[in-house]
Image (cartoon, helix red, strand yellow):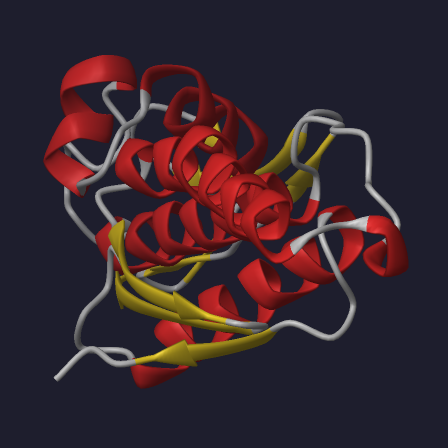
Length: 173
């Protein structure tokens, strides 16, 4: 009897390079994560076509879906948390028009490209003083927490790079 099997059920045995997820092709979680990151894979079918995982008996497809979601969520949050460095202008020395220009620059040149790369988007609706109204779409529209997380991350970036008193409002209907 194969030591990786318990009856008909396959165990997820740790290996040197991660935990084997796809027993048919002996593909680990680390290999799947790396493929998803490097190639922008979005579905189990994409993973199967790229590295064969999930293309055999199909018992690992749920685990592969979880890995894809985890990597994509982590990538988006990390990208939003680590924007390109821009020199912050102290809030007490910045004019309203300069603040508005800087807000637009950060949103459109740093944050929006990251969202687009992950099938999300944002639209700047208006800036009134220190209140910024945007429409935001996450790559997972069925998950209300995804948009809340993005909104929180974008607020943090604007606080860090522009002005800590900025109020960000999502006006997506």
